[in-house]
Amino acid sequence: MVRMWQLFLLVISIAVYYGKVSGISRYDFPPGFVFGAGSSALQVEGAAAEDGRKPSIWDTFSNAGKVLDKSTGEVAADQYHKYKDDVKLMYEMGLDAYRFSISWSRLIPDGNGAVNPKGVQYYNNLIDQLIIHGIEAHVTLNHFDLPQALEDEYGGYLSPKFIEDFTAYADICFKEFGDRVRSWSTFNEPNIQTVAGYDIGLFPPERCSFPFGLNCSKGNSSTEVYTTAHNILLSHAAAVQLYRQKYQEKQNGYIGITILGFWFEPLTDSSEDIAATQRWIDFHLGWFLEPLVYGDYPATMREIVGSRLPSFSEAESKRLKRSFDFIGLNHYVVLYVQDAPAETDKERDYVTDISARISFLDRLLVEDFRSLKGFEMPAAPWGMQRLLEYVKLHYENPAVIIHENGYADFSNSATPSKTHDDAERADYLRGYIESLLLSIRNGSNARAYFVWSFMDCFELLSGYTTRYGLYGVDFHDKDRKRYPRLSAHWYSSFLENTGLERRRSSYLYSS
Ligand code: IFM
Image 1 (cartoon, rainbow, N blue to C red):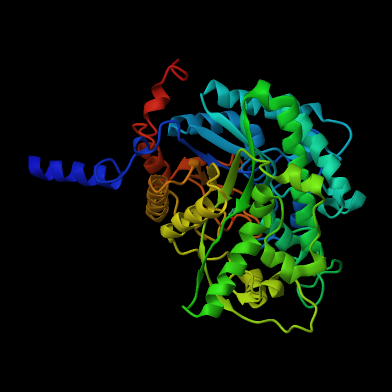
Image 2: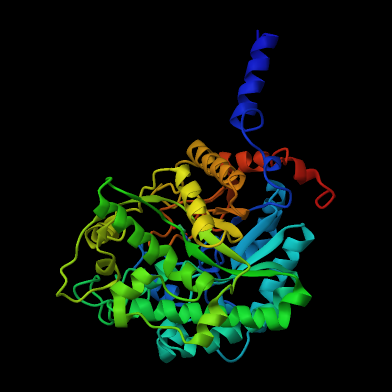
């Protein structure tokens, strides 16, 4: 027979596990701090050729069998058809906000020109559904999925024509949806999009040049990575200017950009490794943050890259400076840096410009990456604290949104083996959320945190073999059945929702 004290102990241990006794809850955070979870259009929507949508460069890439499991985002998690159910799950979980992106080629199938009314309708429906449930909409305009038509027309991000088309696309989004959108991010992770797409040729449009990338048939790794980043920065600044002049006052939203935020540590205490670490920080974060905060690229980059680095006119620099209300950071991992001097008389690319070895971007490992299921990312929550401290000290303590942080498991199968029990993910999230709280107590201006991802999705490069979801998705099931993992229960409980059950009986769903 179970005794009272045993029962008591059991209850206490469950409560401790769910973070309600010794752990933290959302009420440890400043009032108004937003907690959410995210996705991107390409990775969850599916309906890739439905209702007038045309392909993005990622559709072209995956349709050509370039993703590890040869899969595509044709159906993905089918959120296009299941958005109502998904919003209900978000509501039950107690999310304050959902971060998603708009598929440009669903809204404007050719990238410029005619707007697709079915696209407008879909995002209106999704946003309305979120609002009805009291969930804020945080929208990314470009999460990697450039319309293929713009790639074909003028080389996409490579051409300055991109700036005009991006601004026109942003204008339509602000006009159609801005009355209900809390925050806009112009671009997701341009600091990896450019390196992976135009230096090492790993992402579409797979541009690179010998000896820097993998079997590309076109490209120039020495210059294109910098040209595309430059055009993206100018497009961002133009869209922000437009939003501020025409919409912000009426719509009361915020606008920013989302940067991939690796954190770097020197491998040894040697002065060479320490200097190499600073180079990585400058090329990875400073590349975007310095122009946004101070109006120009970091001095290290200007010195090392020289004439291959485009420059800003005075007017451009002025437009860029402070062109954000917040900086979005996607943080997953700490990388260790070792100095690796490049041969000075040879042609260079972004990686040799930095001249330092790290795990993922070193070309030898990139080659391995092709055959990997994904990359293991050991949890190091202190990395988030160091990243936030660095951003606070070097970039005038901007408002920060952690737009992505999450735990990958490589189940390597469309039917997950670890269906519900993802205690590792719950522990991972708790560790990072605790670090975030310590950063805030130390003066970081972080305002929001989003788990990547709300549910399993079509993962870039590795398809359905890598899972990040709080909700699992059975990709073998025609209906793409969703099921809550332990981490979904944990997050819900952290959010001081009394668990996923409470809201199921709320007024919204009572019959
Ligand atoms: O799935 C991606 C997302 O699209 C961009 N940031 C990293 C995630 C995990 O790889």
